[in-house]
Length: 277
Image (cartoon, rainbow, N blue to C red; front, side, top):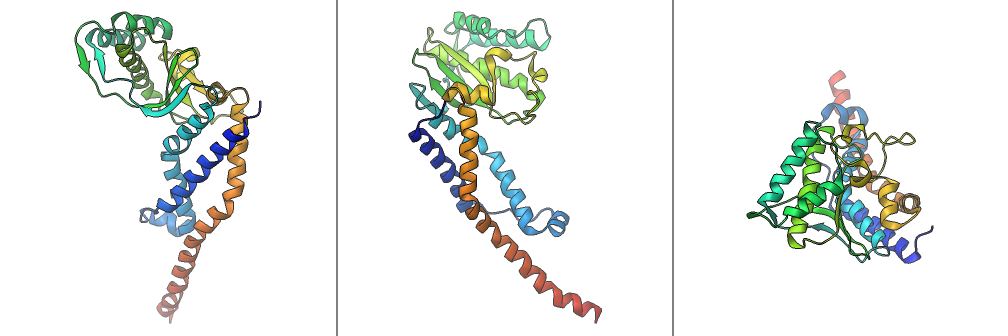
């Protein structure tokens, strides 16, 4: 199913603006890899540094705004960098810790709906404690009122981090229900693409901690959930099209580093000759 033209234009503008903003504000860090720089050239190292810098904030600068643009036609509202809430009850804290202990010792298996039900029962019981939680990357409100809270992760998250990811998802539920005990809410991990394609995404490392059916969406599962059938493939086509469109701008930006490298080589040549004279 093709995306509406207005939505495509919106996503294209997000990509153009994000890359151009990055170019206008990016300054390569001083060379801290002298052997690499001399062997490969300053231009290639600048490109490597730029890609690394882009990867670092790809989630906030590209994936989040693209997700919001994509969700605009499917959800009542779509926002990013939101607080799930500011309070969690002491009893909800206790329930969350019990859930985490059970999963860590493999005495229980992850079951998100049961976990939500357990937290809902105690979400206003005991002392209400102020908390400062990780912000929700993308918050969606469906037409039926269900709230979806997404934590967007890198394509290969550290396997050891899933315990804290799980705790964050449960705390978001507790903080949200503390404000509205009857609200239907889901919290999920989103991984924007599968780095193992065409092989399936490697999920075994998180199997004992996450409810894979209800807490994890990878690649097309995430994008098609937000934008409808074939949204993922449509997005890949948009990214490719904008990449081709902006290629001259990208090439021109990195030409300056080729010029710097050539100038440095030319300046060094006479000195080299003097040493052998």
